[in-house]
Length: 262
Image: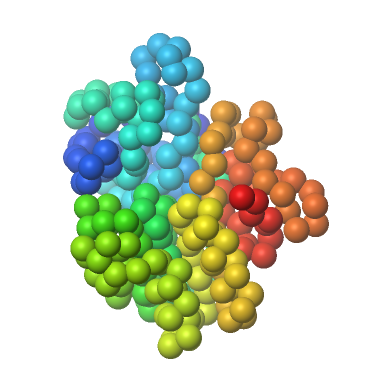
């Protein structure tokens, strides 16, 4: 985990709608851009007052280090993100970050499989771009319910091969992401799996990691109050029956490190 984080007032550079209720937000935040690692997040204040009172956790989607910019891919879920979606370039927002423990990877060239379901692709693009710069060979699997929910496929394609699957067959092939994942693991060799998405997808990655003997890392999506490990509101259970704070010991964990309930 990065030992550096700070509260920053950042100017909005751009905000665009990329899918129904999904937005790509670009902020000018040189300090955060310089310190961030793939898999980390920020806590962003989504109000000018106290409603909503708590900040919202957003995965760092992209970092443009030379420009001092960071990007977030998020979906409107409630009052806070609805407020954020209405902000315009030139306005400022307050964020705390970078926070959490990100992905762990070798600087030596390897072969990686990235698995993202829906908005779960958000933390994976930053990782894909970092790995591509290290000349990793990458395959990204993107799953969604329908074509309009397939997010940032073009951006991932600049880092390696991309395969899309949708439940209704409106983009890519028709089926479920875990079906595509199993087939990919049967037909190809990978050094590591990186994934993010809803609980069933993460549990599937756990299962296939054990079955095929390939190490995996998963980024957990969890509600957070403080984001710095103080409130203990985002714990998950470890294999040794202790508890881990998603915001502090995570949000990225080795797949065999945690017990996923539900």
